[in-house]
Image 1: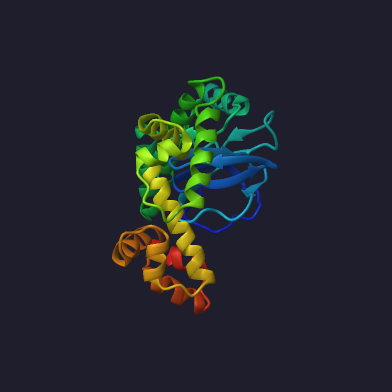
Image 2: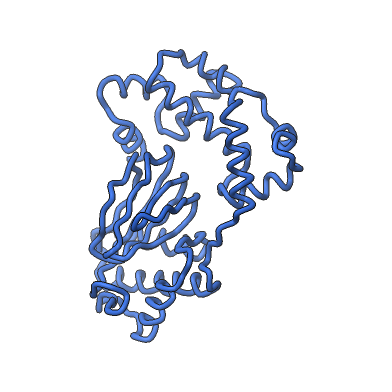
Amino acid sequence: MEWGQGSKDQLETHRNDGLEVVWIERGHLNWQIDGQAIDIVPDTLLFTWPWESHGSRHEWEPGHAWRYFVIRVSGTDLTTVGLDSSIPLPTDEVRELVQVLSQVQDRRIMVDARLRAGLEWLTEVLKDSNSSPRQVARIVAALLHDVRIRYSESPEGAFLIDEEADRVTARVMAVLQRNLGREWTLVRLGKAVGLQRTRLTELVGRSAGESPMRLLRRLRLEAARERLASGDDSVTALASELGFGTPQQFGAAFRALYGVPPTTYRRRLRSGETPDEIEDSAIE
C-alpha cells in the first residue's frame, strides 16, 4: 500500500495506481479532478479513482498538510472495479461501496471523530515497520466501511456545497485583503459585510473551516510570506503594515504556520531553497 504525508506548493496532474483517499488536515487547496475544479477546506477527505487525473489548479495555499493512502484495486472503470482481495470486506459491501462512491455528486467528506481516529490509527500502523500486511488490511477495511457509511448519509454526498457561506466568505476575504493592516474586530468586519458577528462567524466557519479572525491571520501571514520572498521590508515594517501588534507576535505567528522565523525563511529562500524544502524540513 502506498501512502505519505506532508505538503507541496503545487501537485502536478497525475494518476494513481489505485483508489486514493486524501485527508487534508489543514489548509485550503485548489484542486481539479479530470478538469473539474474542486476547492478543499481543512479536515476534508476525498477520493480519486485510478483512471482519473488530478492535481493543483494553481499554487497551493501555504500552511497546509495532507495524508494520502492509495489502495490497490482491479479494473479499468466503474463497471469492472474491485478491491484488492487481501482487504477483508464482504463482496456485497465492496459492491455497495463502489456504487455509493460512483453516485455521489460531491466527493468531499468532512472528517468526523470516527474517521479521524481511523486515519490516525492507519498512519501509525503504516509507520511501524513491524506491522503485518494483514493488520493494515483490516484497518483499511474498517476505514472503507466508515467512508461508505458517511457517503450513504446523503444522496448528494456527505459534504454539500454551501453557496451562501461561500459567497459571504469570498466577500470577507476581499474586504480583508484590501485592508490587512487595519485593526479588525468581529463587529467591525461584520459591519463591513453587513452581518451580525454571530452570523458572520457561522457562515465563514461553514465555508472556510475556521473563524473570521483565524482567516484574517492566515491572509496576513500569506501576504508576509510573499513579501519576504520578493521584497526587502524588515520584519518590523511587515509586522506594522500587516496588522501584527509587535514584531515578536508576527514572528511567533509566522513560525507557527511555516515552521521557521521570518528572517530564517527569507535567508533560506535567498540561499536557493524552495518554499517546499523549507516548510517540509520544518514538518520533519
